Length: 478
Image 1 (cartoon, rainbow, N blue to C red):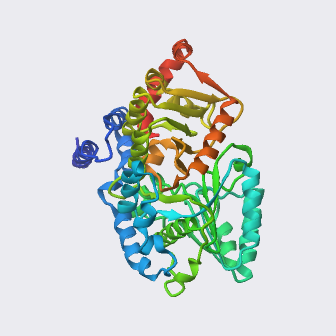
Image 2: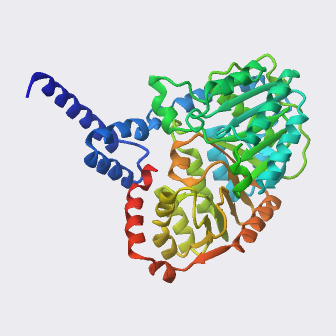
Image 3: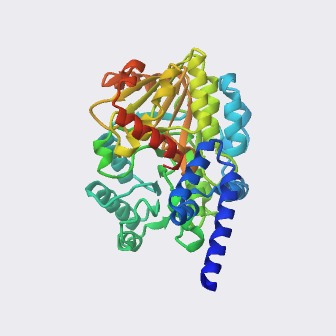
């Protein structure tokens, strides 16, 4: 062996030792299976496995960048808010005390650590039809007078996306301030000329991450999965629907908001805009937060998730909400690949007598995801959790309703990627009326489902069992 080979071998051994140390000390690995999966990948693919780990597996919570920047953002911008934005300035206790005391720990977790303040009096409309959401959004965009803020995971080049792009460019040329954030990797096939045309027509466009050698891991693995629009500071959209033709074909859930809930979306947009390199309008900042009337008794927290915060606050909040349930928990998700703490909380609730129902599609948009999702059915069914599989369509809906009081709707799937890796945004609503509507949607959707029984599941073909065991092992890496 010549000197070069010795040097390369020594470097690889050193890199491997560092990698193993990082895997074993990874704070995000509450599930040891994730560490074992990475170790198996490195054993079977010695060089590629190490490369994949540094691209897709390194825990950014070691760094805490987003949390530090978020605190700095709020310290700088909250004092600039006008007096009418009382949730951020002085009325936390009043709104807090309106919420059922059983949820005070959950509210404090999110408000105290994640700047997710309690917002009062929003008008909430739950949208389950993609065509209707697009029609309403287009109408609201056409009527914009002051500003439009857009932050989307997927914004494609199909007919509906181009139509909205034309509206954004036209409104910008009319003097409306239009800011647009897109995810780099999800839209990697779209050439710069597509966005340059928008910039040329007055739209301020920023990728969520600036591509560089130092940010390649963050760009590839920690995706901006949010879907958010704010129009004139008065109308907001948040949920699971992207701007693509899929929105018209898939079943999904989205929210249209008026009232103080829009403040939460606006603050989170500006924080993302700042992180993406956009300039903050400090002088005109109060103008983006107009006075809102109280439309209802709704109480809401807009909850962002960032993978390089110190803790996974959304995942912790989900566990807290599940543990607080007394009567029922109904969940719709396209991908059921929960982290161990979430799975334990669900099983504990079911074994404690809480009615737990999970709704997923019989076939998702990726066959390998079906095997990974189904790998958890055995322990879910054994705990008494009901599984309802949608038969005739793929549901992209991300929704949870608990005890006719708490509803959670947003961009997060109930999978490891959304709970630990992606930038997400969700709404936690403490509102019996919204919960009743959300529960009604779930029960209506159940009519198109087939419930899986433990006996039937045990009779599935042996080869499916083998595939599911394999995918279960690697599910923490999906």
